[in-house]
Length: 131
Image (cartoon, rainbow, N blue to C red; front, side):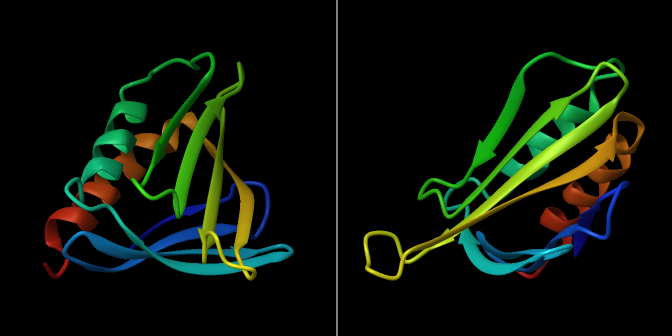
């Protein structure tokens, strides 16, 4: 497991139970709870590489950087303020095309200096989980 904990609230995004190219993503805290199995298909460590690319930034960046699963049931984006606050926007969705389709989005705030540790935890999760 690895997680992104908010530095400004009780929100947390957890990545759990990896099995091959599938894993669970949970969003929990301050007004939101959602869980979804997601599939990364042929790119199970793509999220780890994305986190590692964010961690190479020693200074705040401009714009939004994103990663998503092929079918879009999980999306994550990151932006960084000039003061070094990193905002992750996480979106989970399920049952696309059905009358009961759902979508949950929540922001989680972190700090630029925490990105290397998050990237290391993501890499460990994707290299050492059950496959």
